[in-house]
Image (tube, rainbow, N blue to C red; front, side, top):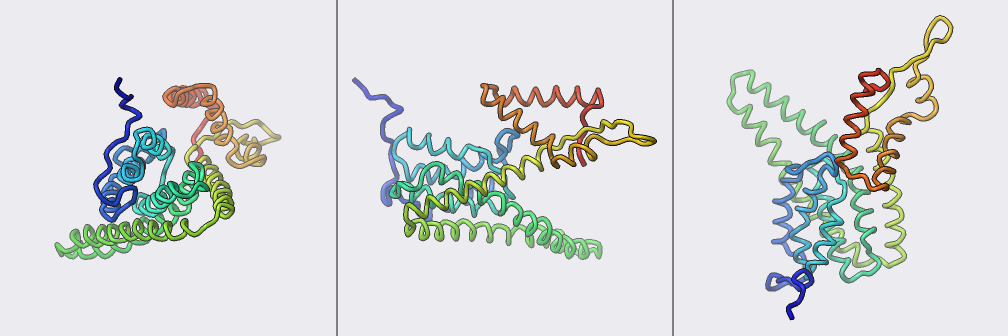
Length: 286
């Protein structure tokens, strides 16, 4: 009787079994450049993150069940400035590597730290790359191009992309090395505290994403004396800024718990948007 093919062990590359090597990190770095190639509105960069982690998962886990479970963890929602994703990838790979020998590192620990890093690094990445480096390089390149110098376009391509690639590789190697040394020296009690703190930060990040990604308001107003009072600015924002986005989030979260599929929610969003816009009940907040 043959064994179930799903539960059999799979081949591991010869030498350095169950360890993330430089070659593995290099493959992960090349994959990290394609983070947004599979961007979608349900999990945004989640599929890309799982694709990046795949070489490390193949190295660390031997059975198909273990590999499938690890990939499933990393298919969760993920969104970050693409140029700094390597910092999260390196730290997450270090946690996956240490998880095999440290029972205090759980699935929740890995996911909590990943989410906690995602928000702050996204803000830093936007400011560093979009708000600083790109503007400086563009200003110099445009000045040269307007003067008829062919070096202008070349400077923009090289001056922006070369630093980005070098820094991205440094982020990956640095965060992996730092994470490995740190995780191997902590106790179970300290890991529990770190996980708890990372979970709280992660919840704050998700709350911020809810307010920034869900843009909805109502233009309705009611007469007050000789003027009128806007329901959104004078009432709802006075109770809690972002109340409608928060209510929408909890409605969709509740529907997911009731068995609704993401594509059901997308259709519901379209329907509510059309009906709200046609009747004038809903609008888009600026």
